[in-house]
Image (cartoon, rainbow, N blue to C red; front, side, top):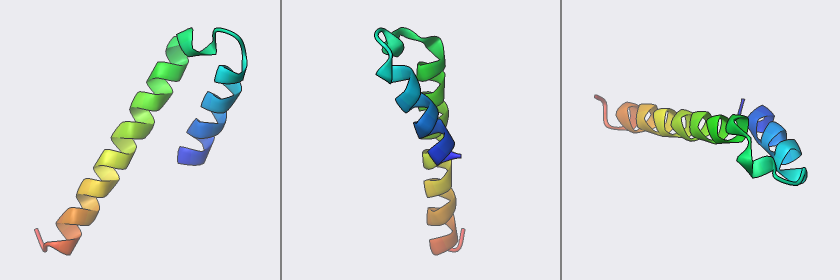
Length: 49
C-alpha cells in the first residue's frame, strides 16, 4: 500500500500545482497513519502487551 501511495503522490506532484490537490494531502495522511499504526503494533508485540 505504501508503494502505491508513494507512486500516486509522485505522479501528482510532478504536475505543476500538484501539491494543491486534496488527494495528495489525503494520501500523505493515510500513509502516515498507516506507518504509525504498524509501528505501534510492532511495539506492542515486542513488549508483550
